[in-house]
Length: 353
Image 1 (cartoon, rainbow, N blue to C red):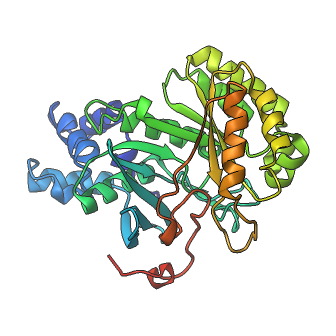
Image 2 (tube, one colour):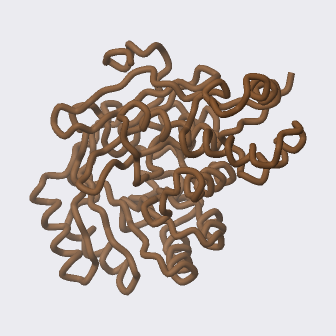
């Protein structure tokens, strides 16, 4: 039996066509879209302004993808919340909600696992299992909002997976989450992280979506970057930076470079000077990230003095640089620490939700 279409992944026009096929009056499409995309209901039974018979008819021809909270952790340090979400097929993903002065921001996942194989990240250690659908990506936002009873107004696609490796679904998700009749999230409040899939970066630049592109760089030369990030063998730094310059020229948007810092590996003054030369004249910003511990990789984070010295060298060369504040450190919710959970919620080490 074929899987029913997912209402949560449907653009309004597709939903309108479905309601016409089902014989609903024209106004039903807007009602259903609001229930699914604005209120984030988990099922058709929650659509209380539809008759019982209309809800039943809709349920026979469409579904709403599930994204339930299997477990969660709350940081005692800063209130960051890490969620373990279970999907309809039993697969699990992790997402993080961070609290800032301007509101809540979610670090959402785009894939179950990841195939990029970066040597400092927990998400890809088991490889890629599958892509998430647009509905499953939206489900993370709705599940967290319902749990916290607050609206999430910022998002970073920096959770599990490489967003540009799931390009079609991620693009559909961005258009849905930004729909004025849905969550209406400003694309200027969305950051999309990539390890540097150059062909997809060029494609994204033509979409006219003013998202912030965050490029994981982590090294100032090909030898070191290839050691840390296998993708560099396909798209070396020169090719990647050419794509970044093209993205800036096409979109007018500043690139954000992510730079995780490892003790004695990529945090030396020589690395800082080399990075400054690479980025000279580019409309960009560098986020310096004292590397977060992943037990299996056994790399140590840079000392705070080395991070400060690195930042000073970049800024003296005219490259804007900030040191990212680590949130959720006590619950392994920081950059690079999200991983696929393969057994029960108890393996998450927290209470059931």
